[in-house]
Length: 257
Image (tube, rainbow, N blue to C red; front, side, top):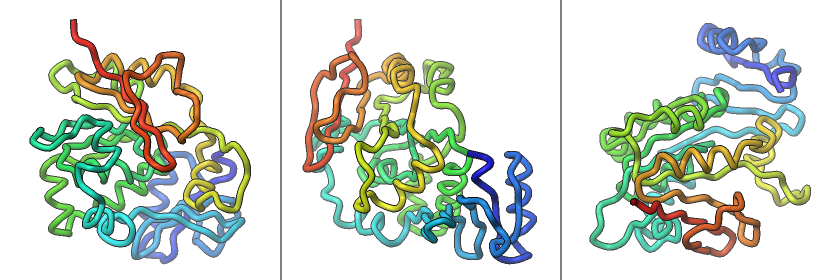
């Protein structure tokens, strides 16, 4: 994918930051207008975006406006299917959560809105940079800053390594997995953010190992997000599943000896 990806900057003031990132990850760096790769991690005055130059579409992460801000205000609280999947009920304390496949951070943001402390793990430095940029921009917002103070942090790296090496005292109550899986068919209805992510990342090849690592690390639950009707992530059957209109959450209850 590196041959199909470069880093760009839309103004000279941003060139040093963009080219420093590119150098660390062995990527080409050029002005936005000069880019010739299919995908471009583009530094702009407003945000960092991942642009697909072949389709002229782009994605960036925004935690304080748009769809995520609407979700914070009107998301449905503890009645949401995802809230029940992580074991959040009325009168219970929100659990600590590691989102081990954080991606663009949408579900991690939902957990923060539910009162959870959240650690986001993302192995792609490109996607991690988008989320890091969004957290930085949102840190000036009063509501989001409360999430940061309570616990909303990004770690860029391999989730399997992180979970298997995590100190006993820092193990989370819940680990959440939403692995990339191959699209069953090409369709114009596939959202642009998913199209771009699939071009960048492909699909996850180590989901069984990641589930094993999560089951060995979480103290209460592991939750796996799946498309409704899809097979379970591995041969291990979930303890219970929670379904919404398009999504199923396979939940593995940790049994303590």
